Image (tube, rainbow over all chains, first blue to last red; front, top):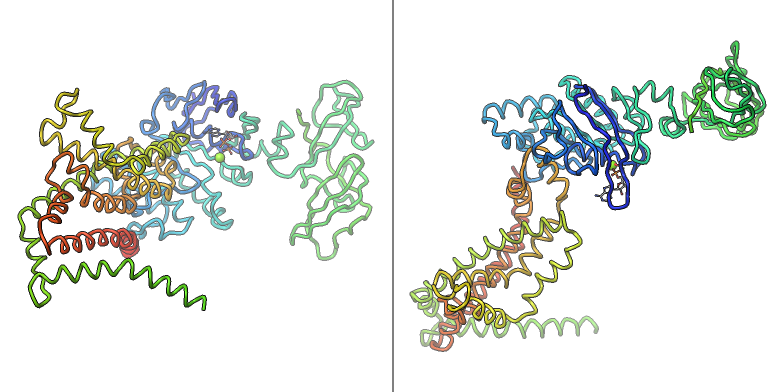
Length: 354
Length: 260
Ligand SMILES: Nc1ncnc2c1ncn2[C@@H]1O[C@H](COP(=O)(O)OP(=O)(O)O)[C@@H](O)[C@H]1O
Ligand SMILES: [Mg+2]
């Protein structure tokens, strides 16, 4: 039984069906990310869990208790917002103590808790400052401490890093994950940044059009995307057209080159299917050709020198393949328009459902 | 040349505005024959009538402010948060007191709440005081509403409310501990305007027959020579003092915050 259970959640705003049949079970202490493009309903799911939106249908169960009809202030759920939302009229310490005061925690205990929380976020000496005297990263850490202080059952974060500089974003990622693991708190993290979701989470839910399109560990999501949407959204993806030769044997042809897929596929002979290939699975055929590789003839159409990595795009018959190669001082990258061979292992091909 | 004319126009405006004031000030200092003195002011301040009416109006103003804040802050908050489509309607309603003459409002009150009506407020002095306070709240509504509305526009109402709610706060706590402290400056400027309006108000107080400062001003004007000028100067200074405080308070607050 999951600790936090979202059961067939639905949400419509008027005629706008925003969340569709959303199922998700989260174990105690698990860190789950909702990943998807803007407008796909991530925030709405989170706000239903927090109690700020009422589901049109479905139920939310926390620790065996149905909270669907509870008001937000009865749920004991911590929330961190993109815009920090610190109370401007209170000091950092007062902000962190806010939830404790409402709970009626005795003063010495509350003070000890505030000190513990400020220690946790590394802002021990900032208790008497006001929010406007802090940087964005510091404010967001205070917001995290404030949400965690009353020891909530669940922590919700809605794009908490989106308003911050790139550098702070990356360091705060690690910090949030560390605190989450230290406290063992069940967490839902909403983001549209795939790197964030993959690097922080135990599991990732990729959302599209109000639905959970795929749920899995970051490794599964990245390496075995089950739809074209997931594959495209999580990382850069090459999609190629393939023609079925023998479905049961997994034999197809790409650009006229026959090869065998790692799995059997359904479909009549001669039908088109979509397969995908990660940029890092493709390499220049002259470089490290190995046994069983397939080589396609290609024309270089774009060269991006990015330092240690060179990102190439090359036309093959019926598509464009992107690939990354490492920079080597003794081997300059191919020129624009050069004829090259692109090699990959058929094992790396991902069959997409749609 | 153009400059000259604009300065001339400006000078003319200043004279038009300030000369009567200077004249009044000068006159108010001439109670003692042959020399300037503050005798008129001493006479006004020593008048028990003045003390009683001024105290009455001050208390009324404070009650009006408290009542206005209790009504307006939650209303503006709720409209902004939950009923944004009703905002134009509410705004229109709060503007009505500027359009409807006070005399019309007060006659309406007297008809509605006279001793033979369903709610005979005018039957007792405390009831009439209450009615007067409610009337003052209506008069100050446009100013209070606008001040609070501007104040609430400057903070992220929804997110602050949700943050407080997720920490366990109910509506009263949200309003009292999070919203009100953050719009205090705006509320104060509304309060000073309300004070300035109530202190000098005549029509409501006279028709409801209350011992307020406005009717006293008029009475003094008809019965004394030098004192009305002194009174006028004093009320003028008071109003300007309120306006200066409106300008000053926000700066004071920021200063305080930055220092702490
Ligand atoms: N309160 C609301 N009223 C009407 N439509 C809303 C409301 N909140 C969100 N929506 C709509 O729901 C959709 C999903 O929004 P949201 O959950 O915020 O997406 P995301 O967080 O993934 O960007 C959007 O099309 C948005 O316009
Ligand atoms: Mg969102």
